[in-house]
Image 1 (spheres, rainbow, N blue to C red):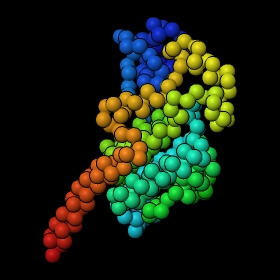
Image 2 (image 1 turned 135 degrees about the vertical axis):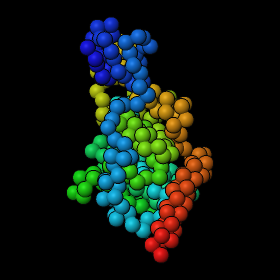
Image 3 (image 1 turned 180 degrees about the horizontal axis):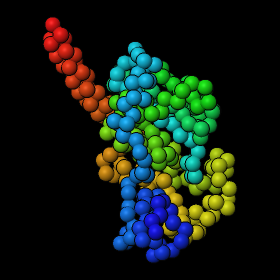
Image 4 (image 1 turned 120 degrees about the horizontal axis):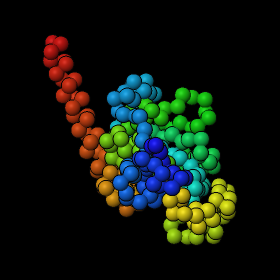
Length: 260
């Protein structure tokens, strides 16, 4: 018997449990701890999606920074103010490295938060809004981006962006140490019964997405997107983007030489 994720039966009932950090499961012989959720996406698999999207990005300066925006999930609530701050930080990051923002939101993104984010963008950008009727560019953005900014409440987007092997920056959608009952926006997503269950129920039945964020940052695979890290982040992004441009230039020169 193999179980993926959070088990509801006793742990010793399973031959193997495959889990991730948000579920607080102990270290024992029948539990495999992965740092991120499983997924099937790779850069090679996404190549065709990237080439399909590339014409829509023509003219946007590199590096291309994909901004992947989630929304409300558990204790994380994407308010209008947070959307505005995310837009401002991402805009500063793209401006600092002379690049562009490739933005996509999701079904969970509150419209006012997405509007506030988009209103902050002054750098060259491509912006997809969920429900607009245009083809969803998400897979293409994963393939083409030189770097990623991801809202931290989405485990799947963090895992898929991390797998692309590009600089990854996490935007914290949390509210710090403030008690949730003092935050008016906390009441719009989860009922009190859920919050009590998460706080008072058995530890293995709780969930804390922040554990995944912390593991990514502590292992050096991601950094927090914060005001004081913009210049350092921009330098990290420029370096790999510059390397790929140099290789592309060399290849073009060699093709031209052999054609002649």
